[in-house]
Length: 123
Length: 232
Image (tube, rainbow over all chains, first blue to last red; front, side, top):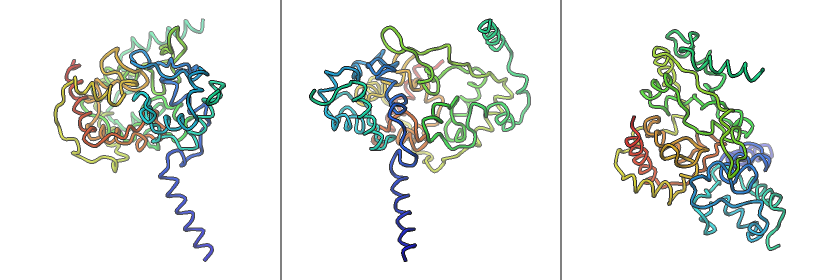
């Protein structure tokens, strides 16, 4: 009986993991996630000057600017990454990354952004 | 001295006629012997970032569901870059005075095939049809949209211009150009890929924009209009 329960639990867990981006494999390092998904617009230095900015009407956020970054809470940053800029009334150019990043990876990215700006919300 | 030798090698490569190693008609044998070092012919797609970064050319194990064969055959004979910053842009950029720039010295040209090999390789590629379950044959229903309306959708409403060029020299550089995409790729594949890029390529740096079904159709109308405008 216990064995059947364990088996059923494993099946449920496997189904949940396969339906959740980023959980089918181990979570990646925040630095590597940032390089892969964020560099293209926010730049190698995180200063908002990626290769894509040439024809953009709105400058991507400078993640190294403590004044700008301190104005956003961790929850807002999480929402902007997960659901896109429009979810916090910012630019449509910031896309939603929920299709490829797990919540765990997005939380790691938020912590990485705090390291880049060397700041925290409100101060 | 080393750089002189490299330059000489590149010059020889560019001047050379189509590779004699590719003479022959067995496309699958050519694919395996000449292409598999840079292209994944068997799957699966990268599931880690390290694998994503290491990818040198597009995965080809679903080429038969992706490419338009008439375009592929021509392109193999006269290849030109489609992704301005290479397969993974992060490997081909450098800091610039105003913003990051593409480091063209890191980008390598694609080998050029002769007509017979291009035909044979194309035929072989069209047999590679992994992930067919993601394709709904005939899903795209041809229609029209003005370039102006398409521009609005692609740029202002959805922000896709951030990563893709809609004409030579205008748009983002980390993704493939879209002004030729309707000539290059099958319409049903385009719809499926835009619906869920990660279903094809789990770690790809194209976001799922959660496009509505009717917008998926309009985007392909737009790509067709762009391709007509850009027609050679």
